[in-house]
Structures are given as C-alpha cells and as structure tokens.
Image 1 (cartoon, rainbow, N blue to C red):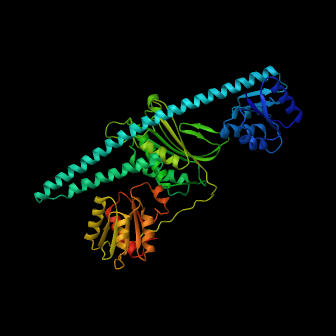
Image 2 (cartoon, helix red, strand yellow; image 1 turned 180 degrees about the vertical axis):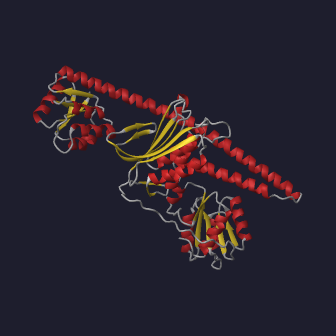
Image 3 (cartoon, one colour; image 1 turned 180 degrees about the horizontal axis):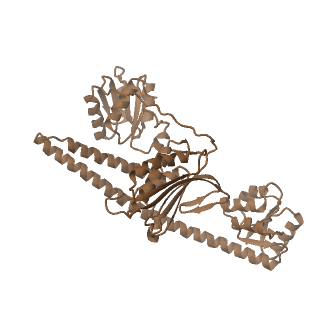
Length: 515
C-alpha cells in the first residue's frame, strides 16, 4: 500500500482529499497545513508520496517545499492547486513535479496521477542505479588508463635515470667529466616531480593557498604572457567585465588553469585563428547544467577561453578531462593538462563547461562563486634571507626509508653537521634515553610505523630534549595538515625536494629565522 502525506492549509480540503484517497485504496499517514511542519515529519512518517497544495501556512509555499523534496530527500510529490496561470506553472516546472493536478479533481484523475507518479519514481530509481553502474564502469576504465599512463611516464623517467647512472659509472672509471649526466638525472627527477603535482591536481588532493583575488587581474596577467607565446597568425582579444568583484581562490593555481586552457587553444589552431579571453559577472536565477555537473543558482564570476580551432570531435568530447587522454601527437602532450584543470576547479569549489564541435572551435568557461569581499585583499610574502648552508650543530635524522636517510646524512655531513641517524621512532626514543645525548635539530619523516613524526617530536620534548624540528613527507599535504603540522611554513619540506632547500631550511631553522 502507498503511504501518502498531505500538505494542505484548508482543513476541509485536506479532509476531503484524505477521504477520497482512502476510498480508492491508499493510506494517508498524515496531514499538515505548512511546509515547515511537513519537513519536520518526514523522518518519522517516511511517506512514499507527498501531495502538496501551493498555498500553505508559514513562510514556504508548496513549490518551495517541492524544491527541497527534490534536492534533499528524493521523495516523489504531486502538486495539487487551484492555480494554473503561466507564472505558477513555470515555477512548478523548475522543481520537476511527478504530477500536477488542478482543483477540483475527480477520483479517477487522482488515481491516475498517483500511479503515474509512483511509476516515474520507480523508473527514476532504476535510471539512477544504471547511471551509478555506468559511472563505476567508467571509473574503472579511467583508473586503468591512469595506471597505464603513470607506469608509462615513470618508466620513461626511470630509464633516463638508470641510463645516466650507467654513464656516470663508466666516466668515473675513465676520469671523465660527469656534469652533463648529473644534470640529466636532475631534469628527469624534476619531470617526475611535475608529474606527481599534475596527479595531485587531478585528484584534488593538493593543498591550495586561497586569497581574495580579482579574476580580471588574473586574466590581465595571463594575457600579457600569452601575447608573447602565441604565434603572429593568432589574434588575441581580452574582454574584462569583472572589475571590483573577487573570488576566494589560489591565484597561482587558477593562473595555471587559464594558461593550460590557452595553450590547448593555441595547439588547436596550427594554421592561425582567433583567441578570446573573457571575464564576466553572472547572476544565475536558476540552476545551470554544464559539462561537469550543475551550477547552483547564485552570483558568479566566469572566465572563458574561446578559440576558432579544430574543435572537439563527438567521440573525444566525453574524455577530454580524463587523465592521460590526449589527441596530440606522440611526445606532444602528457594528457594531464585538462585533467589538472578539472581537478583544480573542482577543488576550488568551481565548475567548468565545454562547448565545441569538430571544425568549429571550442569554448571553455569556468564558474567561480563571487566572494562577499568588495575589495581586493593582497597577501604579502616575505622572503627569507639567503641561507649559509654549512654548520656544526648536531642533527637527529629519523627516516624509515634507508636510501633517503643515507642521502640526508651524507648531505648534512658534507656540510659540516654532526648527524645521529635512526630508522624509526622507537630507535630514536631509545637513543634519546641517554641523558648525555643531545641534538639541536630533529629532521623526521611524518608517516612512519607505530608513531608519526609529530608524535615523536612531542615525545622527545617530554624527555627534556631542547631542539627545533623540520618535518618531511611524500604524502599529500592535506594528510600532513590533519596531524596539526603547518605545511605552509619553513619547517616542512615535501618530497621530492631540492637538497639546497633542505640545507637552507636547516640553517634558517637553527638560526631561529623561520616563521
């Protein structure tokens, strides 16, 4: 039996509706005159269907209630009203009712509407189930593509590194210069570092440093750069219509998004064309369906990149944000550019839309919610003094990866430091139980078996040790921050790091010059 909740402000109409529903075989489990009361009753009554009038007691009308039912509860509903004017019908259409009955009604009309509403609800559930299965299948395919792409790129990088190490071995035995080979290894390592950053952007796991920024400033900055890198056969136009409005974003990341979109547009116009960068202020009075989801109604700043290039073919359209998917020739792209764009925008709370056809160019539009800040707040960055890398202090290094620990110890020793090394927190604690053993600085990995680096630092301090701490980790910064470690100051280094950066932070920390 179908359990129905009635929302109707006229008691006599509600009673008549209840009587008719029960006469034709339905169960009425409740009746309320206001939307607020109805929403409060949902958990306890758990109705299969709701029939609501438009005019109700309280601050909400039936269409307001229907919108909440549709978005938050997924309960099918029928709107029952004496009104049928164009404005009311238009509002009702946007909440997607399962039925709309005009008073006065007959029992046959009522029954037909209820049965159709329940059938639609069943079909919607089935469609949602099929869509979920399809998304899961697509996710598995994407994971396979991702794994293959990572393996391909990292295997190439490792091949380069192993090749250069072989050359170095040979040249050392012949006393030949190895400087170019070392530079080759460094370049390969930086390429691997760049790849991991792209992956973090795609997975939305990187840490953003947001501030209140004007999109018109970002568009202006990028347009100056773009004018120097696009060929002369591409005409550039810049339209900024978003002055005096700001969004709360990481400026560097959004600039990277815009630059990636511009470079993609440039590559899509090998024979020249037109490129338009534009920012706008947009007020959405209703939800907007875009390629990557639904933009809620509200106030937004949008920025777009439009080109007159080759466009996107139908078979490629649904894959453009997939990691390692690229239509560019071999060695001309990693397939991570648009995946990174998607990740950054989603992590920034924004939305991205794509409109394109083969041979008709492409329009990428990003939507970011306007901040309530009316003025631009700039963040000043104070650069640290240039560090003197050498020292003579004692440093305790705790790192469970043996090769990394050995490298850190060698680097510190070669720069004059005395180093005590430990492969795990337990060993470090045992060493520190010797009251005569002291150290000036602790360099510790964050994630280790049984105890993390933050816990180790705190434990050693309870043992009476006086020291500074520098944390290092290869995990995503959000995971590190969850331990209460500030990854934005000069006491944290993310792997892989430049060795001079480590030496610089060590020196600045020991000299008490870190923030």
